[in-house]
Image (cartoon, rainbow, N blue to C red; front, top):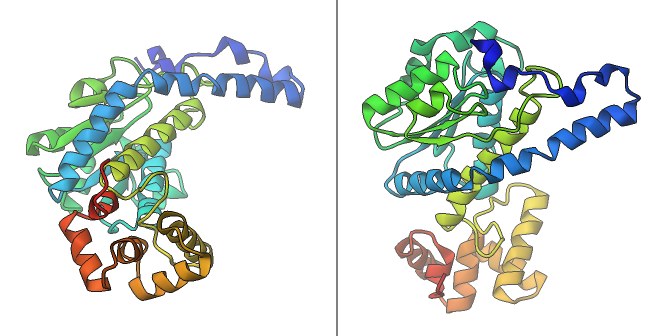
Length: 297
């Protein structure tokens, strides 16, 4: 029953929240939010399994898909859309699907989540294949749209990851890898855009950031595959080159202009190579800067 789900339970901490002063109300919300990180912490072994599974598929040419409805779907689309500007990944490498389509990003289309067949059809329309990974996101762990997508992905033999905030959920049972942070009942009963949404965002951050680090898109803690598409990112790219190559900001600017990318600029300078030679070195290293520089990880 829906009423028996952890995400639908009433939180005793907030039972009289409407009678509190504004500052006391916010203290209740903040205290509850502090429990979210610990809920995610308990799931780190499962999140690590998921990251490694994602990397294994991406290294072989696969793609990462998120599927969800409502808040869960929006968070998946958000995480996917932030990968190209952050890591300069191809637009189709990480894709987010939401029940009801793009209109559902701004407008509630509540009944869209009730159709498991649509979950399958949306994946088919985006050419989801056996070599891909599907992360099904559903705070309740029971959304039919998500379960339909997971069932189709398992039929194909793709990796399936179920992200929910309800222990022993149907989604967890249906997925190869289950990630179940359980922060507990919401401050506003059933409003899973709050604590469950925060937990979901934290996990999604880990999945893509962890995968990109493993794939070599990060050197140290610097985003060396950053796409310098605006003034802020051009400045960041120059500072990254200056830091890793050990050169002045002006020299880093010249290197970036000559190389066309951060990683190529660094390899050109540190290995004393031409642009073509540096690009070949990076290609042989599968884009991993540390490997191209001959450094141990």
